[in-house]
Length: 376
Image 1 (cartoon, rainbow, N blue to C red):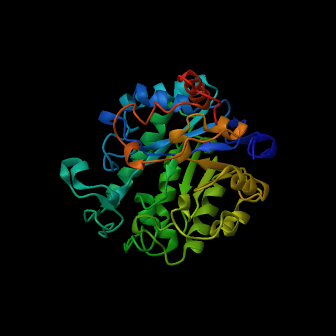
Image 2 (cartoon, rainbow, N blue to C red):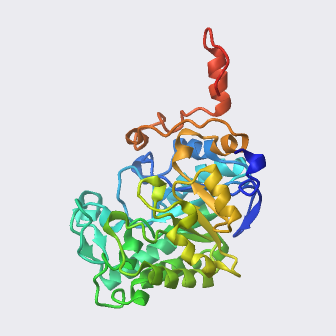
Image 3 (cartoon, helix red, strand yellow):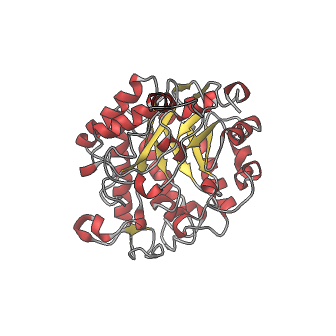
Protein backbone atom coordinates (compact mmCIF):
# COMPACT_ATOMS: atom_id res chain seq x y z
CA UNK A 1 0.00 0.00 0.00
CA UNK A 2 1.32 3.45 -0.96
CA UNK A 3 -0.02 7.00 -0.82
CA UNK A 4 -2.44 6.59 -3.76
CA UNK A 5 -4.14 3.73 -1.89
CA UNK A 6 -3.79 5.43 1.51
CA UNK A 7 -5.68 8.53 0.58
CA UNK A 8 -7.02 9.20 4.07
CA UNK A 9 -3.64 8.99 5.79
CA UNK A 10 -2.27 11.57 3.38
CA UNK A 11 -5.26 13.87 3.51
CA UNK A 12 -5.30 17.26 5.28
CA UNK A 13 -7.01 17.98 8.59
CA UNK A 14 -7.26 20.88 11.03
CA UNK A 15 -6.25 19.95 14.57
CA UNK A 16 -6.43 22.75 17.10
CA UNK A 17 -4.59 25.65 15.48
CA UNK A 18 -2.69 23.38 13.10
CA UNK A 19 -3.45 22.87 9.42
CA UNK A 20 -1.93 19.43 8.97
CA UNK A 21 -1.21 18.18 5.46
CA UNK A 22 -1.23 14.51 6.47
CA UNK A 23 -2.38 12.46 9.45
CA UNK A 24 0.87 10.77 10.47
CA UNK A 25 2.19 12.06 13.79
CA UNK A 26 5.53 11.18 15.34
CA UNK A 27 4.77 9.96 18.83
CA UNK A 28 6.85 10.87 21.89
CA UNK A 29 9.97 8.79 22.57
CA UNK A 30 12.50 9.17 25.36
CA UNK A 31 16.01 9.28 23.88
CA UNK A 32 18.08 10.60 26.85
CA UNK A 33 20.37 12.90 24.90
CA UNK A 34 20.01 16.21 26.71
CA UNK A 35 22.80 16.46 29.31
CA UNK A 36 22.04 19.00 31.99
CA UNK A 37 18.30 18.66 31.27
CA UNK A 38 18.51 21.28 28.50
CA UNK A 39 17.57 20.49 24.89
CA UNK A 40 20.52 21.12 22.56
CA UNK A 41 21.68 21.37 18.94
CA UNK A 42 21.77 17.59 18.54
CA UNK A 43 18.14 17.33 19.64
CA UNK A 44 17.24 20.08 17.16
CA UNK A 45 18.87 18.13 14.34
CA UNK A 46 17.02 14.97 15.35
CA UNK A 47 13.62 16.66 15.23
CA UNK A 48 14.44 18.58 12.04
CA UNK A 49 15.35 15.33 10.28
CA UNK A 50 11.93 13.90 11.10
CA UNK A 51 9.88 17.03 10.40
CA UNK A 52 7.66 17.27 7.32
CA UNK A 53 5.73 20.08 5.73
CA UNK A 54 2.40 20.17 7.55
CA UNK A 55 3.26 17.23 9.82
CA UNK A 56 3.06 16.95 13.62
CA UNK A 57 5.87 15.82 15.91
CA UNK A 58 5.40 15.26 19.65
CA UNK A 59 8.59 15.57 21.67
CA UNK A 60 10.02 13.07 24.07
CA UNK A 61 8.65 13.49 27.58
CA UNK A 62 10.05 16.76 28.90
CA UNK A 63 10.14 17.14 32.67
CA UNK A 64 7.53 19.52 34.04
CA UNK A 65 8.49 19.37 37.74
CA UNK A 66 11.57 19.31 39.95
CA UNK A 67 10.31 15.96 41.30
CA UNK A 68 9.28 14.67 37.87
CA UNK A 69 12.62 13.39 36.53
CA UNK A 70 12.78 9.65 35.91
CA UNK A 71 15.85 9.15 33.74
CA UNK A 72 19.22 10.77 33.15
CA UNK A 73 19.71 13.31 30.35
CA UNK A 74 16.01 13.99 29.82
CA UNK A 75 15.22 17.62 28.91
CA UNK A 76 13.02 19.82 31.08
CA UNK A 77 10.82 22.81 30.34
CA UNK A 78 10.51 24.61 33.67
CA UNK A 79 13.08 27.35 33.22
CA UNK A 80 13.91 30.02 30.67
CA UNK A 81 17.22 28.28 29.96
CA UNK A 82 15.37 25.06 29.15
CA UNK A 83 12.88 26.97 26.99
CA UNK A 84 15.74 28.58 25.03
CA UNK A 85 17.24 25.14 24.51
CA UNK A 86 13.96 23.87 23.06
CA UNK A 87 13.70 26.95 20.83
CA UNK A 88 16.45 25.43 18.70
CA UNK A 89 14.22 22.43 17.97
CA UNK A 90 11.02 24.37 17.36
CA UNK A 91 12.82 26.75 14.99
CA UNK A 92 14.30 23.80 13.09
CA UNK A 93 10.93 22.07 12.74
CA UNK A 94 9.13 25.26 11.72
CA UNK A 95 11.79 25.92 9.08
CA UNK A 96 10.59 22.74 7.36
CA UNK A 97 6.94 23.73 7.63
CA UNK A 98 6.22 21.32 10.47
CA UNK A 99 4.46 21.53 13.83
CA UNK A 100 5.78 20.38 17.21
CA UNK A 101 4.11 19.82 20.58
CA UNK A 102 5.97 19.43 23.87
CA UNK A 103 4.97 16.46 25.98
CA UNK A 104 4.79 17.52 29.64
CA UNK A 105 5.89 14.67 31.88
CA UNK A 106 6.08 13.72 35.56
CA UNK A 107 7.07 10.10 36.15
CA UNK A 108 6.01 9.93 39.81
CA UNK A 109 6.95 6.64 41.46
CA UNK A 110 8.78 5.48 38.32
CA UNK A 111 11.68 7.66 39.49
CA UNK A 112 14.26 6.83 42.16
CA UNK A 113 15.76 8.66 45.11
CA UNK A 114 19.01 9.37 43.26
CA UNK A 115 17.12 11.53 40.75
CA UNK A 116 15.10 13.43 43.36
CA UNK A 117 15.90 16.68 45.20
CA UNK A 118 17.96 15.87 48.32
CA UNK A 119 17.78 12.17 47.41
CA UNK A 120 14.29 11.90 48.84
CA UNK A 121 12.00 9.04 47.80
CA UNK A 122 10.04 9.57 44.58
CA UNK A 123 6.49 10.87 44.89
CA UNK A 124 3.15 9.32 44.01
CA UNK A 125 -0.50 9.23 44.94
CA UNK A 126 0.17 6.59 47.61
CA UNK A 127 3.09 4.68 49.11
CA UNK A 128 2.71 1.75 46.73
CA UNK A 129 5.83 1.04 44.62
CA UNK A 130 6.15 -0.10 41.05
CA UNK A 131 7.75 -3.54 41.00
CA UNK A 132 11.51 -3.20 41.42
CA UNK A 133 11.36 0.53 42.20
CA UNK A 134 11.80 2.61 45.34
CA UNK A 135 8.86 2.91 47.71
CA UNK A 136 7.34 6.34 46.98
CA UNK A 137 6.05 8.85 49.46
CA UNK A 138 2.46 10.07 49.08
CA UNK A 139 2.20 13.70 48.03
CA UNK A 140 0.61 16.09 50.48
CA UNK A 141 -2.22 18.29 49.24
CA UNK A 142 0.14 21.27 49.39
CA UNK A 143 2.69 19.41 47.26
CA UNK A 144 0.00 18.45 44.75
CA UNK A 145 -0.94 22.11 44.37
CA UNK A 146 2.73 23.00 43.84
CA UNK A 147 3.12 20.41 41.08
CA UNK A 148 0.00 21.80 39.40
CA UNK A 149 1.67 25.23 39.47
CA UNK A 150 4.77 23.68 37.89
CA UNK A 151 2.67 22.40 35.00
CA UNK A 152 1.35 25.92 34.53
CA UNK A 153 4.91 27.25 34.53
CA UNK A 154 5.89 24.60 31.97
CA UNK A 155 2.98 25.59 29.73
CA UNK A 156 4.13 29.21 30.02
CA UNK A 157 7.68 28.21 29.06
CA UNK A 158 6.35 26.26 26.07
CA UNK A 159 5.26 29.59 24.58
CA UNK A 160 8.75 31.02 25.07
CA UNK A 161 10.20 27.90 23.47
CA UNK A 162 8.01 28.35 20.38
CA UNK A 163 6.01 25.15 20.66
CA UNK A 164 2.74 24.88 18.77
CA UNK A 165 1.15 23.30 21.84
CA UNK A 166 1.62 20.87 24.71
CA UNK A 167 0.58 17.28 25.27
CA UNK A 168 0.06 16.33 28.92
CA UNK A 169 1.34 12.82 29.62
CA UNK A 170 -1.40 11.20 31.71
CA UNK A 171 -0.70 7.63 30.59
CA UNK A 172 1.56 4.58 30.94
CA UNK A 173 1.67 4.44 34.72
CA UNK A 174 3.28 7.84 35.32
CA UNK A 175 2.17 10.32 37.98
CA UNK A 176 -1.20 11.45 36.64
CA UNK A 177 -2.06 7.85 35.79
CA UNK A 178 -0.99 6.85 39.32
CA UNK A 179 -3.67 9.18 40.67
CA UNK A 180 -6.28 7.95 38.17
CA UNK A 181 -6.01 4.20 38.61
CA UNK A 182 -7.46 2.41 41.63
CA UNK A 183 -4.51 0.01 42.04
CA UNK A 184 -2.05 2.85 42.69
CA UNK A 185 -4.28 5.38 44.44
CA UNK A 186 -5.39 4.43 47.96
CA UNK A 187 -5.84 7.98 49.24
CA UNK A 188 -8.73 8.88 51.52
CA UNK A 189 -8.75 12.64 50.90
CA UNK A 190 -10.19 14.70 48.03
CA UNK A 191 -7.70 13.07 45.61
CA UNK A 192 -8.69 9.46 46.30
CA UNK A 193 -11.61 7.08 46.48
CA UNK A 194 -14.25 8.00 43.91
CA UNK A 195 -13.57 8.39 40.19
CA UNK A 196 -14.24 12.11 40.53
CA UNK A 197 -11.63 12.42 43.27
CA UNK A 198 -9.01 10.30 41.51
CA UNK A 199 -9.44 12.41 38.36
CA UNK A 200 -9.17 15.68 40.27
CA UNK A 201 -5.39 15.99 39.87
CA UNK A 202 -5.64 15.41 36.10
CA UNK A 203 -8.23 18.14 35.64
CA UNK A 204 -6.29 20.55 37.86
CA UNK A 205 -3.22 20.02 35.66
CA UNK A 206 -5.26 20.46 32.48
CA UNK A 207 -6.88 23.63 33.77
CA UNK A 208 -3.49 25.00 34.85
CA UNK A 209 -2.23 24.58 31.29
CA UNK A 210 -5.42 26.15 29.96
CA UNK A 211 -4.71 29.19 32.13
CA UNK A 212 -1.63 29.80 29.94
CA UNK A 213 -2.67 28.39 26.57
CA UNK A 214 -5.89 28.24 24.56
CA UNK A 215 -7.60 24.84 24.42
CA UNK A 216 -6.58 24.62 20.75
CA UNK A 217 -2.96 24.29 21.93
CA UNK A 218 -3.46 21.74 24.72
CA UNK A 219 -3.65 17.96 24.22
CA UNK A 220 -3.38 14.94 26.50
CA UNK A 221 -2.38 11.27 26.36
CA UNK A 222 -4.33 8.48 28.09
CA UNK A 223 -3.86 4.69 28.16
CA UNK A 224 -7.02 2.83 29.25
CA UNK A 225 -6.50 -0.91 29.85
CA UNK A 226 -2.77 -0.72 29.19
CA UNK A 227 -1.91 -1.39 32.85
CA UNK A 228 1.48 0.28 32.48
CA UNK A 229 3.97 0.02 35.33
CA UNK A 230 1.56 -1.80 37.64
CA UNK A 231 -1.20 0.80 37.22
CA UNK A 232 -4.60 -0.74 36.61
CA UNK A 233 -8.18 0.08 37.47
CA UNK A 234 -11.12 -1.96 38.71
CA UNK A 235 -13.46 -0.26 36.19
CA UNK A 236 -11.47 1.33 33.33
CA UNK A 237 -14.50 2.00 31.16
CA UNK A 238 -16.26 4.10 33.80
CA UNK A 239 -13.05 5.87 34.82
CA UNK A 240 -12.01 6.91 31.35
CA UNK A 241 -15.54 7.70 30.21
CA UNK A 242 -15.69 10.27 33.01
CA UNK A 243 -12.23 11.61 32.14
CA UNK A 244 -12.82 11.84 28.39
CA UNK A 245 -16.18 13.55 28.86
CA UNK A 246 -14.49 16.23 30.97
CA UNK A 247 -11.67 16.68 28.49
CA UNK A 248 -13.99 16.93 25.48
CA UNK A 249 -15.99 19.61 27.29
CA UNK A 250 -12.76 21.63 27.49
CA UNK A 251 -12.38 21.41 23.68
CA UNK A 252 -8.75 20.29 23.70
CA UNK A 253 -6.75 20.07 20.50
CA UNK A 254 -6.59 16.26 20.57
CA UNK A 255 -6.61 13.28 22.89
CA UNK A 256 -4.00 10.61 22.22
CA UNK A 257 -5.06 7.10 23.22
CA UNK A 258 -2.50 4.31 23.50
CA UNK A 259 -3.75 0.97 22.26
CA UNK A 260 -3.81 -1.70 25.01
CA UNK A 261 -1.77 -3.94 22.68
CA UNK A 262 0.93 -1.24 22.63
CA UNK A 263 3.35 -1.95 19.82
CA UNK A 264 2.22 -5.55 19.55
CA UNK A 265 4.11 -6.36 22.76
CA UNK A 266 0.91 -7.24 24.60
CA UNK A 267 -1.57 -9.87 23.42
CA UNK A 268 -5.01 -8.68 22.47
CA UNK A 269 -7.49 -8.20 19.65
CA UNK A 270 -6.57 -6.57 16.37
CA UNK A 271 -6.81 -2.79 16.21
CA UNK A 272 -10.23 -2.78 14.57
CA UNK A 273 -11.60 -4.65 17.61
CA UNK A 274 -9.79 -2.53 20.19
CA UNK A 275 -11.34 -1.94 23.61
CA UNK A 276 -10.84 1.76 22.92
CA UNK A 277 -13.74 1.67 20.45
CA UNK A 278 -16.15 1.99 23.38
CA UNK A 279 -15.09 5.63 23.79
CA UNK A 280 -15.71 6.72 20.19
CA UNK A 281 -19.26 8.02 20.77
CA UNK A 282 -17.84 10.50 23.30
CA UNK A 283 -16.10 12.39 20.49
CA UNK A 284 -19.17 13.05 18.35
CA UNK A 285 -19.97 16.71 17.73
CA UNK A 286 -16.73 17.97 19.24
CA UNK A 287 -13.70 19.81 17.89
CA UNK A 288 -11.35 17.57 19.89
CA UNK A 289 -9.56 15.13 17.60
CA UNK A 290 -8.50 11.55 18.39
CA UNK A 291 -4.99 10.21 17.86
CA UNK A 292 -4.44 6.46 18.17
CA UNK A 293 -0.95 5.12 18.82
CA UNK A 294 0.50 1.66 19.32
CA UNK A 295 1.67 -0.87 16.77
CA UNK A 296 0.03 0.66 13.71
CA UNK A 297 1.15 0.00 10.14
CA UNK A 298 0.13 1.88 7.01
CA UNK A 299 -2.76 -0.51 6.22
CA UNK A 300 -4.09 -0.62 9.80
CA UNK A 301 -3.76 3.17 10.09
CA UNK A 302 -5.69 3.70 6.87
CA UNK A 303 -8.34 1.26 8.11
CA UNK A 304 -8.66 3.13 11.43
CA UNK A 305 -9.26 6.38 9.55
CA UNK A 306 -11.71 4.77 7.14
CA UNK A 307 -13.70 3.31 10.05
CA UNK A 308 -13.66 6.74 11.74
CA UNK A 309 -11.97 5.37 14.83
CA UNK A 310 -9.51 8.28 14.85
CA UNK A 311 -8.43 11.46 13.09
CA UNK A 312 -4.65 10.99 13.38
CA UNK A 313 -2.36 7.99 13.83
CA UNK A 314 0.81 8.16 15.86
CA UNK A 315 3.91 6.18 14.92
CA UNK A 316 7.00 6.15 17.12
CA UNK A 317 9.67 3.43 16.79
CA UNK A 318 9.77 3.49 12.96
CA UNK A 319 10.80 7.17 13.15
CA UNK A 320 13.94 6.20 15.09
CA UNK A 321 15.53 4.34 12.19
CA UNK A 322 13.70 6.16 9.38
CA UNK A 323 14.05 9.94 9.63
CA UNK A 324 12.09 10.17 6.36
CA UNK A 325 9.40 7.79 7.61
CA UNK A 326 6.54 9.81 6.16
CA UNK A 327 8.07 9.85 2.69
CA UNK A 328 8.82 6.14 2.88
CA UNK A 329 5.14 5.46 3.57
CA UNK A 330 4.06 7.92 0.91
CA UNK A 331 6.17 6.22 -1.75
CA UNK A 332 6.06 2.62 -0.60
CA UNK A 333 9.80 2.56 0.10
CA UNK A 334 11.36 -0.13 2.26
CA UNK A 335 11.76 0.71 5.95
CA UNK A 336 14.99 0.35 7.89
CA UNK A 337 14.02 -2.11 10.64
CA UNK A 338 13.91 -1.21 14.31
CA UNK A 339 16.66 -3.38 15.79
CA UNK A 340 18.58 -3.24 19.10
CA UNK A 341 16.55 -0.82 21.20
CA UNK A 342 19.19 -0.82 23.98
CA UNK A 343 21.42 1.36 21.81
CA UNK A 344 18.73 3.97 21.19
CA UNK A 345 18.83 5.55 24.65
CA UNK A 346 21.64 7.80 25.77
CA UNK A 347 24.85 8.66 23.97
CA UNK A 348 25.45 11.10 21.15
CA UNK A 349 24.77 11.24 17.43
CA UNK A 350 25.28 7.52 16.87
CA UNK A 351 21.92 5.77 16.30
CA UNK A 352 20.22 9.12 16.87
CA UNK A 353 20.94 11.48 13.98
CA UNK A 354 23.05 9.17 11.78
CA UNK A 355 20.21 7.10 10.28
CA UNK A 356 20.15 7.65 6.50
CA UNK A 357 17.13 8.57 4.44
CA UNK A 358 16.02 6.31 1.62
CA UNK A 359 17.68 8.58 -0.95
CA UNK A 360 20.94 8.57 1.05
CA UNK A 361 20.84 4.78 1.30
CA UNK A 362 20.32 4.49 -2.45
CA UNK A 363 23.23 6.84 -3.12
CA UNK A 364 25.49 4.89 -0.75
CA UNK A 365 24.69 1.65 -2.54
CA UNK A 366 25.42 3.16 -5.94
CA UNK A 367 28.79 4.42 -4.71
CA UNK A 368 29.88 1.00 -3.47
CA UNK A 369 32.44 -0.67 -5.76
CA UNK A 370 30.76 -3.29 -7.94
CA UNK A 371 27.31 -2.29 -6.75
CA UNK A 372 24.51 -3.84 -8.78
CA UNK A 373 20.82 -3.05 -8.89
CA UNK A 374 19.59 -1.77 -5.54
CA UNK A 375 16.86 -3.65 -3.71
CA UNK A 376 15.70 -0.36 -2.21
